[in-house]
Amino acid sequence: MRGAWRLKIAAGLAAALCAAGPAQGESDKLERGAQADASLEERLLAKARTIPGTEVRYLFAGFVQLDAHWTRRELSGEEKDAFLSSAIPFEAAERDTRLSGRASQLNAILRSPTRLGELTAHAQADLFRYEEGAQPNVTQAYVRLGEWLTVGKTYSTFMDDEAWPATLDYNGPSGAVFARQFVVRGGIGLGERLRVEAALEDPQAESGSADRPDFAARLRFAGERLHAQLAGLSRSVTYTSSAGASRSVDGWGVSASAGLAIGEDDRLLAQWTTGEGIGRYFNDGLSSIGAVFDAGGTLEPLRLTGVYLYYERKWAARWSTTAGLSELRTQSEGLRPADDLKRVQYASVNLVHRLATDLFVGAELLWGNAERQDGAQADDTRVQLTARYLIY
Image 1 (cartoon, rainbow, N blue to C red):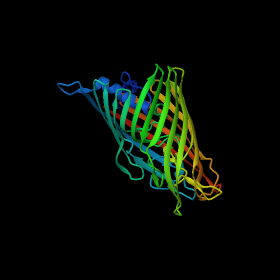
Image 2: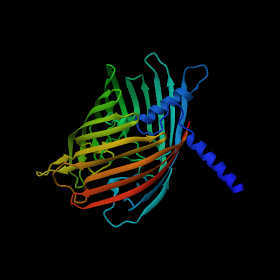
Image 3: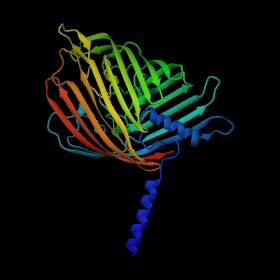
Image 4: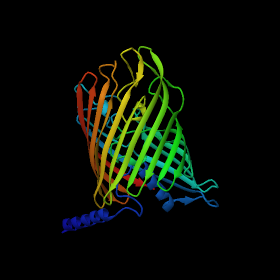
């Protein structure tokens, strides 16, 4: 009898836990990019505290995340907690199993009305400093005045943070544009649905030095079911080869992306990006110097093209999947080391369940492939289990 009562109590607790839905205004999906930031702002409106005697509101929020990884062939290099297709080993490698809490995140948000518009300050940090282990890593630290001026470290203007797929893997698609850096960005609305933004940004050259700040601009359309962005990038970088040759070149990039709502809760996400000398803006890498010697022995910036296609599917209340594939390849002909990468591919599919109001659990299967200049190829797979507990 005691055993039966224990089973009934356990079943009741489990049912109550699974029945606990999200708080009002919050999504059943595990979010990333601009969607995650928007959810934080919603929490600010609902749960913020006010500094006595002022109109200043503030909120501390974040999550504790635990990831368990099983990788068929241990990735090369120092960074093993993110699935980087460029780090797939070409030689024999053992299996790798690890636990990580580095994706855990803390946010501090402050809002205050001003004569020039609402002032928003946002600081964000996790423990994912690439190749340096579990150390504090400031991912965003910016101030936004109204909708027309942003200053500080945040998502690059060349990136589409509104169409970032919700992978459990910290890194995400190899061929996607992803960069968080210091920006001075201004923007204006062109009617109800169009918006244009332009920015000067930290250049962070792959090698050598940058000759000036990067200039990025984008045009965004925000409809009821369609989000679309066209972005451009201009930069000037001095490349230096291992032999000591150097040359200042002008880099450029063009990126088109979109997010299309399908049905009530699903989204189709796509991005295509191409350019020269823009390797650092992609989510993975193909070259250590980002340049190639042409037939005449002149150092030229590497021409890269990246693409991804992802689908976000909500199966039922509290159940969702994000699945897709991505590729990053070089289109430059010229002299490069034989072991430099020519192409990387990345694919993932996950299943995420909102177990309780503040708790997400999920599993993700990842696959990657890398191809070198000499034609050699290698592939790898990873299984990731994730638990995320929201704190606010």
